[in-house]
Every structure is written in C-alpha cells, then in structure tokens.
Image (cartoon, rainbow, N blue to C red; front, side, top):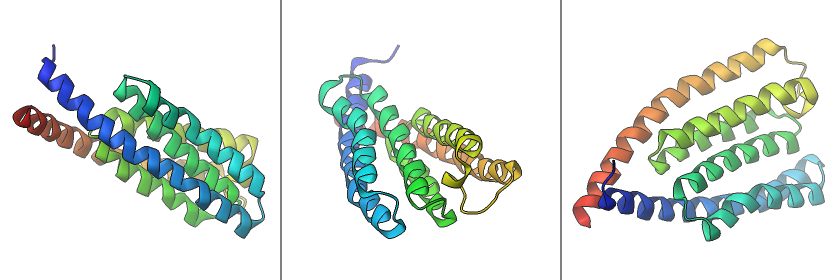
Amino acid sequence: MKSESIINAENDYLSKVNKIFSYALLAHIPVCIAFALTFDSGVWFALLGSLAICSLPVGMRYTSTNHKLTAIAHGVSLMFFSGFLIHLSKGMIETHFHIFVSIACLILYANPLVVLSATLTIAVHHIAFYFLLPQSVFNYEASFGIVLIHAVYVVVQTVPCMWVAKKFGDYVIRQGVTLA
C-alpha cells in the first residue's frame, strides 16, 4: 500500500505533466491543418479530426481526479495524432517518425504503462489500417512484412523507454516525498 505522501507526490507530478501534454496535443491542431494544406487531404477534416483527438484527454485534465488514467489518455491520443498525421500525409514514411519521437517523450510521464498503452494503440492502428485503408499507412504498396518490421522497431524502442520511465518514476516519487 502506498503512503499518502507517495500518492500526493505522484498526483502532483502527473497533474503537471498532463498540463504539458494537453498543450502539446493542442499544438498538433495547426500542424495537422498544415499537413492537410500541404498534402491536399482536407483542412476541415484535419481541424475536426484534431479537435476530436484532443477532446478526451484535454477534457479529462480539467474534470478527472484520476491523473494516471488521464496520462494514459494523453499517451493514446498522441498515437492517434501519429496515425492521423500519417494519414494526412497520405502514408509518407517520414511521418512515421512522429511515433518514435512521441514514445520517447512519453517517458516524461515516469510511468511505463503510459508508454505501453501508446505502443499498443499504434500497433493496433497499423495492423487495422493496413487491412482497412492501406494507402493511409504507407505511400507505396507495402507487404504485411513491412508492418511487422515497423512493429519490431517500435517494440525495440518501447522496452528501454518503459525501463527508463520506471526508473524515472522511482526518482520522481523519491524526490516528491523528500520535498513534501
């Protein structure tokens, strides 16, 4: 059982990081619009899709007292933005880098579960969209083997990111309890 000081330290930290990631998600709105203009993929679609992706985690930041669940919602939504940007760019391979940068940024949550939930989200996205709307994932005729190669790279990145998030989380809690 966690002590009250540990729970308070976790909640204080997560509240701050949720605020940062809410702003980061909102900053994706003009980026998505720019992608839509660049790739002729629909400005209104980009705007409405971006607002939809932001709505749950940003809303939870203001209404939920469960900071861990809000953190997971932010991580999942960040992967939704990865998939959305890939779609808006009509499968441009370079846009896939957003996934790797985002997973690394999620270490700031100091919670391996946030990293894992984001990874599972993008894995399901790539598999589902490969079969449902393949041109949304790749800008060339890729085989399912290519999807698996992408998955291997994401898993290889995710494992150390989860480890670093766990170690960072331990540090954040010790520091928060010490300062309390």
